[in-house]
Length: 445
Image 1 (cartoon, rainbow, N blue to C red):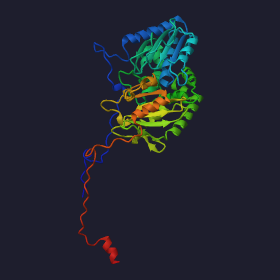
Image 2 (cartoon, rainbow, N blue to C red; image 1 turned 90 degrees about the horizontal axis):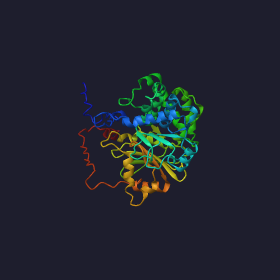
Image 3 (tube, rainbow, N blue to C red; image 1 turned 180 degrees about the vertical axis):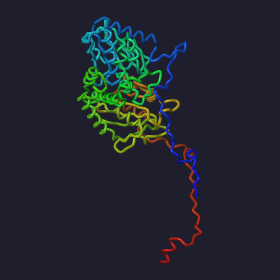
Image 4 (spheres, rainbow, N blue to C red; image 1 turned 180 degrees about the horizontal axis):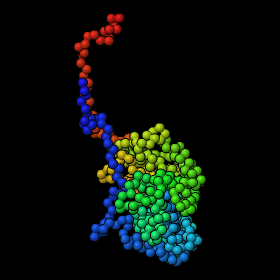
């Protein structure tokens, strides 16, 4: 007798198809009044930035490039370095400033360090933006900020433009060699920030030739190596900068011995720290992991826990699934003394929700529950970055206040009577009419 085929759509045990994860290329870009796409930034802002770079190169004066410490910032910085030299700037007139561990570009000691190098021009790349005094307090210094982080406020007296691939889009029209020699840098930096599954669909630039020349594996492995030194307790970002500046391709980066040893060090520390079990906010929206490490592994762990099909210490990250869960938060109490560095990512199960999860808004909403001056005490480094990947650096005491506002570790309130309770039918087992049972058989024996 043939069995009747079961319709998988009707079967309760049918495997549920995965919901597609939105891609950055799918986001609708802004348009101007005429309907033209404003990507990656308004045309005037792009042209102003190009004119700034032309002026830098023509002046033959000291230019200070201040990139962020991650792969995205370093790649953008090297693109600018190559653009300026292609325009005729002397390499000896170009210098780099890398922010110290735990600092931001806006800290006083960083401003003094930049001023001491006596630049005529400063180009700040991928450092985030906030209301602040001039980057360097001197009327003779001109500053350009290239950034793509979410912000409506910028330092005084600085030109600003925001978008993820802005540096490449600005520089590739300045000289014919830029697109040829910097395409892989654009790909590496973008994968470093937006992930290695990016589709590269319009309006993103066409990178077909880049990926014909260099495999995605080589590009992604190079990103991993470039990010490694800044994550170590040693924090030797200069190693990554010098390796990238000297490299002609991703393959050159893959051969650097210090980058390789730094990645091995970080991989070991990540494995050691990922065994931490989470606690949840009372509303179930935030999963909080606490670690204590001198290495900057909290963003890596947050990213891992936000993905599925990965195992951490025998625990599968994909099991963090809940209709309530939205955010993975990893807090590191050992990176900077008396401070807590924390990183947030959107949980895999929360991607594609409508309305979409906005980490920055969620963090600020929690802080707004405070009736004192907590927001002011946490400072400007709270809830910075992207809507999908945010975090902060705040004093330990204030962080604990934030956790109290989230009610981390508290049990959720029980549902009201009659709500959320499953009604179960008692299973009725009728007496079998069969008289010749196993029990009767053994009794006869």
